[in-house]
Structures are given as structure tokens and as C-alpha cells.
Image (cartoon, rainbow over the protein chains, first blue to last red):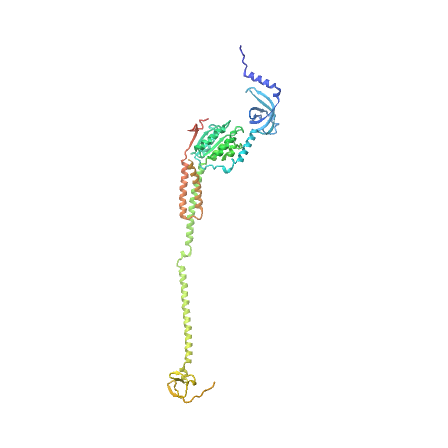
Length: 402
Length: 74
């Protein structure tokens, strides 16, 4: 028995006819999540509609896209109205969408938000836990695919900034189911064997499901536990993953990660040379300051005319001596005048002067008699004259009252 | 490798500290000269660390480390 084979074209045509003839498939309303969305330059939209278990290709022609009230995006949960048909050339069936309605946010996106909130509450994103990226790392550990633009960008930027840097690549898958397990193993190997001073975990951008390994809780915890500081460079600019939040530093692109990890060596050299300049200037200033202080000191009078002070003191002493001698002379003269005054007075009071004027002094045994009552009749007395003494006897006493 | 790193960062901090000390008015000339010499010595060391680093691009495969040529991986 012989079977006549049919062509592939015939098979696809047959299936297409079958499907096109199915009334149910002519008007389907399917819910799912958009991924791999592409807006072709012709204006047609191509995307995949998926749920946790399956996916189906979709196309929306330009003639319908004008009626959309939103721009479809990866991760959006939508309901698509259209017909199912077969694209004969590729042997695939797809939904030819006529209308799309937004249906809340996608499940994956929801899971992402939930995980983000959970880990944030646990404190995994806290700044206080973030480790400082070393200023001058010798070895940069890179966890990414060994092919593609990411590693090339990192090598280019790193070696441009520091030609002497050591880049140690540990190749890991960066997408697909279970990719996070190999990334975690890589982080642990780098830590256990101290293979790097800083780690870059990177991949290019992609849809939420492409980036999904970087949203896994186990990877977030491994990044948190790593003793080596980690820079995440997952996605491009606007795609944030959980890994980005928990990493010690987030770079918008792999090139930026390399810039953050590797210091520009000429900048570092320049910084060092500015210190040398600062030292030189500071020391020069110090010396100048000392010189200035010395000069200022030397302009002061004590140094300029050291004898001046002493001379001034001499004048002072001289003046004092002068004053002292005039004072003494004055005092001496005063005393002389007083003395001569007293001598004159004493002279006038001298008994000899009285005697010269005719008075006599009565004496008994050399003692002056001042009153008549001291004498008795018969006493022998001496009467002293200016020119001699007369001896006499008392013969009578006449007292005078008063 | 790790230790050299810390040294470099510490050295850079020390460079800043010395600069601040030297720029302060209080430091006498003798100490200033000493600090100046210390700072110049340290900056020389930093430059040496920079110059002595070695360029290497390596790939770890199955526990072995090999030279990595990005162009051969395409």
C-alpha cells in the first residue's frame, strides 16, 4: 500500500482552511499578558500573549491600532479580541487582533511589586547596609554572559579608564529558567575564594520575563549577603529589577557600572598631584609667614635701637640725681639760716650780755641764787661782774611782795 | 590584593589629612617640614600602587582561570 505524501504548503493550507472555517476561532476574546511587544515601522504591532503556562503570537494591523486608547507594553495584562488564523509560510497560528482592552496589571508585574515590598520591609534595600565601592579595586569580578555586548562594554570602559585593571569574568546565563541559581553560585564563589574587590552583575535590557532571574528572592538574598560590594547593571536606564534595589550600587547600564567600579587612573593621578601641590603651597606659605613675622619683629624699636631704652633710663636717673642734690642743698641752706637765727637768739639771752649791761649774778658756792629767800643773813655770797667777782656778806633781808 | 586596596584608600585619606594639617595655622615650621616629607613619600607610594597594577582579562571556566579574548568568544 502506497501513501502519497502531501507538501508542507498543502498541509498548512489545509489547517488554515480548517481554522478559518471554525466559527469559534473567528471571534475569540483572550486574556493574557503582553510580552515581546514590537511596534514595527510599518505601524503593525507584534507581540506575544501569555499566561503562566502558555503563549500565543498576536498581530494587530495598523488599520486597527489607531483605535487603541493606550500603548501596549510588555507586562501589561490585556484582553484581546480577534480571530485566530494560520500564517501559512511559517506554519504558525496567531491571533489577528481587532481590539485590545487593558485588564489590570500583569501577574508577573504584580509578583515583582509584591517581592519588592516584602524585601523592602525586611530592610534588604537599606542604605545603611550598602557597602562602599572600593576607590581603587585591583580586580573587578564580572558575572555576565561571556558573549555579547555587556562584557565587551565593561572591558572597553574599564581598560580605557585604567589600562592596568584586572577583569575576572565568571560567565553565567543571564536569562531563562534557573539562571539565578548560577548567578548566586558565582557570587558565592567570588566571595569564598576572594576573587574580586568589587562585583558587577550585568545584562542588557529585556522584557520583564527576560529579566526575571534578577527579580528572584534567592538572588536578592545572595546579593545582600555578599561581602564583596556588588554593582548591578541589569537592564537599560528605566528597567529596575529587585537585584538593582538590593545591590550596593545600581548602574543604569553595564558601561556605567564599569565607570563606577574602575576609577579613571588619570583622575586618581591628578588627585594625588593636587595633594603634592597643596603640600608645596602650604609649606611655602608657612615659611613666608615665619619670614614676615621675623621681619615685623625686627622692625620693632628694641631691635632697631637697642640702647635707646637704656639711654632714656639714664636721663631719668640723671634727672633724679639732679633733683636730689638741689633738694639736699636747699634743705642744708634752710638749716643754716635756722641755726644762725637760733644762735642770735641764744646770744641775746646770754647771761654775759646781761652782765655787760650792768646786771650781776649772785652765787653761793658756785650756784646761782634766783630768789632772796634762798639767802640768810651772814651767808657769804659771790657777786659776778663782767670784769670780776666781789665776795660779800648778807647783812639785811628786805622782801618785796608781788 | 585586598590589603593593598585598603592601604590605597587609607593612603588617600592620609593624604587629605596631611594637607589639612599643613594648611592649618597652628602647625610649627619643624612639624610642617616633617609632615611635608611624610606627604610626599605617601603620594609616591600611591603612584607606585597605581603603576604596579597588572592588566589582565581572565575568564573562570570550571574552576580554571584562562586568558579571555572577547573577540574569540563571538
